[in-house]
Length: 432
Image (tube, rainbow, N blue to C red; front, side, top):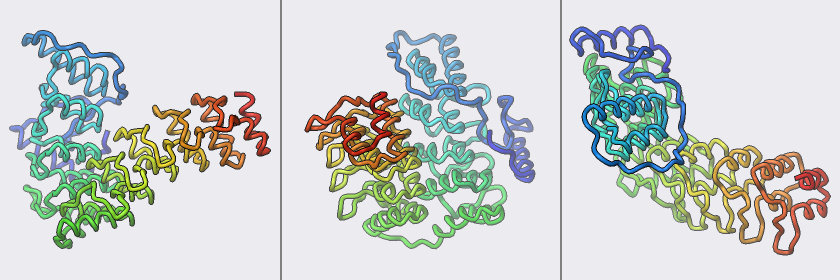
């Protein structure tokens, strides 16, 4: 649940709601905060994909059954119960159906930050122009809560960027007025700026511009972003793409947003075939990478030496960057120029935390590269037997690594450890 806003904002919003609803606030769930155009939800219950087959929809449900299905879908949405939501949609539930508080499964996903649920509703015909009781779009609801990833997905779905709700606020206004200036709100503002949000339009009721709001609230980084937009020139598309590549490499997320705003493609390339996302990942520039990912950059785009943004995370060992890319569902089977997955260079380089995180995915821990080595063999052959390599060996074994797989000369990981005098690693392998 979003923190309580300042009293002045509370008063403004309550008065506005009263005016817009004929003297009575719109109906809400018991946990709803009156300052927000989006309604709060119970904590997420289930977020994993369903492994159960969905039954084909048979006959169209009658009105009574349709109402029941819609009601159950809205409940499942509040609980972020993807399994139940999929089943109900397959039975005929409508992702756009609203309850008495003007909430739908689609709108709930936008305010609560349920990205997988949003994808599910979009796949099944969610109306991105649908409005809530404040005449606000899903983008406004997402901006209110600082859900930059949701905002980016809605931008990709061609939602109206500059729509105003009945409080006179656009998504940009909400991110600033109701936000706390923290990282997630800065990310959200950058997404909106990149998408072409009008940074000059004043809020309709008080005629205060977006720049005046963060200045008065002390949101310095957001104010800097907006000032940069107002001072920006209008480059050509080619210039914008060069600026995007440079911003990605240097880590300037605001410059990257401006370049995208000016028409730069997310898949533009430098002379080595590297995309902006690959450059950002290589230098571990998280704010730039988040912006690019939220707007739809490809984590599997290959460069001239057969690297992808995801593969590079295995070289850098950045767990945070892996966390940015994993929601995009990168292809974990793509191989680098040595025929390896990201797990192999990570094991070679001793990136303990990265290995621990990635073995929890569907990556193949026993994949053999062109040299004939698995991640386990690389950790032993190219490692120094120190504590971090001991940890990696244990993590890989616990994840199902096969210690009996030998290299091309028929030498196993245990034999390599013994030959190299790595006694503790050898002990771990003997006990596997």
